[in-house]
Amino acid sequence: MGMQNVDLAIEKWAYEFRGKGDQWKALMWMALRSWDVGSEQNGDPPRRYWGGHPLLAFGMGITQQRKSLLTKSQSERVRRAVRDLAKAHAITVIEEGKGQQHAVYELRLELPSTAPLNLSGSP
Image 1 (cartoon, one colour):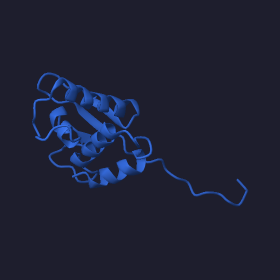
Image 2: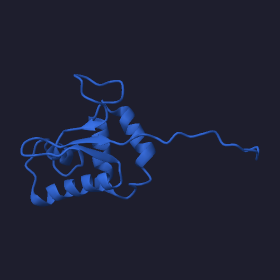
Image 3: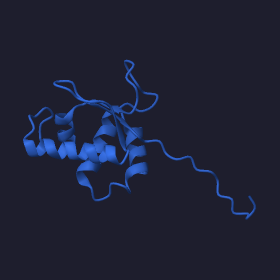
Image 4: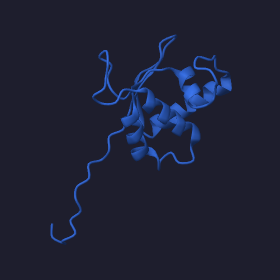
């Protein structure tokens, strides 16, 4: 799972999220837990995170157990990190979570194409 996604997330988003620990940890966990392009299984699309907030809280270091019940403040930290990632366009909400169904997020890891520099001075 996700090692290519982690590399791409670092390359694309490290500068944007420097000093923003919760957002950075959330993005890294989502990248690690999502399928890389070309390694999808069971028809699951790549770069999608559907693990839910308790698992995300664990990945962010907020809780010590994978499926802990979150306190109000823990839940707010996770929601704030996800909201900030979405606002920065690092992730897109594919499906809103409702009841026991987790939200699904797509990681935005596309790097801009780089054209070779023209140093000759002519167009």
